[in-house]
Image 1 (cartoon, rainbow, N blue to C red):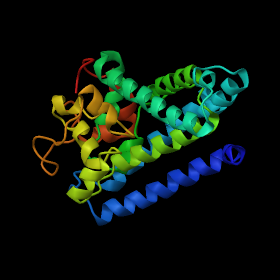
Image 2: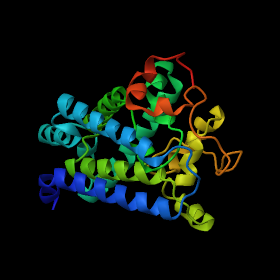
Image 3: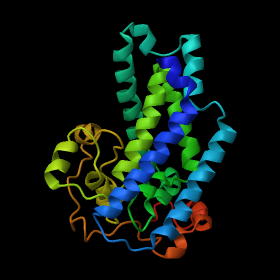
Image 4: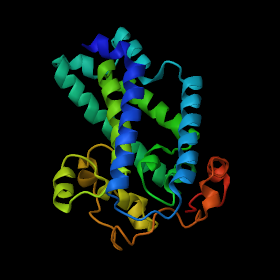
Length: 271
């Protein structure tokens, strides 16, 4: 089964990405949580162009990608997890959790370290919050993020199939928890016990700095609760809260050329 999944990795990745993008786009159009401030197609064109740029950069700099590294690490017997001699399913689950913890830590660092915040704030500068917001990251952040992921994979000795699952889950949950999807409050309360929901993560995109510096999780909400970075709701409420950064408030700032130069504009803690 593992070999079958790994041999079909490109098809699985592209198929899951496109399917979920379409499903969530339809869902948030049918049941939106907030009114849009900017024409959807203007934002989407630029956000999806960033995805294309990021993909090209990754393929150029990391042709083997994370799963390729995991295969190499496995062939060398590197990492902590192989030394434990645990059953394969348990190793996969542990890998998923520990990789997620690494991404949580990386996310906190991108907020706390001024130079890293310059790169990450492009993600926060979107004036609306929908499925494409979960895809817009500066290429510089994507490169550093891949480096962190590589280090975590090598240190853990995460199985290749676990790395594939993690990347699929991370991409999927990022689109889901950034979607402008209205969930019943009772359903949201149940879901956010095990997964980061749109209402939970939307708080993280508030213009209020104290709210921006909360709810860092992408997949599971447990790290935020464990490390004291969880915030249940925005002070102004979800319909009234202001999304984005104070520094980049015009539609011109949503163009791809402006997004790419945002790290070089203003102060390191600007936003």
